Length: 123
Length: 123
DNA sequence: GGACTTCGATTACACGCGTAATAGATTACG
DNA sequence: CGTAATCTATTACGCGTGTAATCGAAGTCC
Image (cartoon, rainbow over all chains, first blue to last red; front, side, top):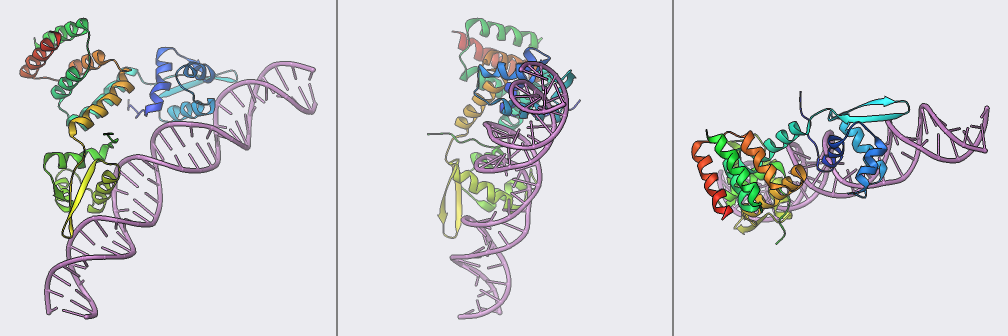
């Protein structure tokens, strides 16, 4: 299955549906009204485009349409992560990780968790 | 200083100049000929756009122009990383790092290095 | 010094994206 | 029924991007 490219604004739409689905267009609109000030028409457009590019699927429920993801969030994260990794770090994951470790603020717990992860990875 | 947004193709151009600068347009073209099959005109266009958006500066050396970065690679990495972090991971660095640790293949040395980094961060 | 070459600047064009208005279809209400 | 309300689909438009041709100026060669 080919993972489509999800644009910036589209991620916000997808996130709504990854969290809960299926939803009608208007439910998505309501959900997004919390974090954005997009017009409903704008959101409908994005829903259509996402369907067209294969990121969403929908089925008619009477007169309303129910939208749901056609690709998992995880797959999109991997695709997007890969693209970012290649573009900015020339594909080198080590430096990427080092960058974020240095640049971000992490809680003690997170640090411990990451160290555990790395240890497991090392063995 | 405001860091401009660098597009996908533009990163490749910037990388040439981050590695060695100043260079004439044609030197950049030659350098890129190794990895791409872009027409020289295409590359000239990107150089112009990068100057216009403040990522490059240039000075005339006789009839030729010499291009050089106006922003550091590190600053761009930080900007781009921030945008990626927000978009895909909702700003949570921990999960981002965890994702790449799990998704990537890392050498023993890299793993050790990252663990050291984290340890230092923890203290 | 006029034609040719060489460069960078200007212009072009299609496509994706952010943003939205309008049209078309279907349902619901009076 | 017919008109208003409600949905989705279609169309729009300006901007960034990928990709490139063409223009114009400035040297270079006879």
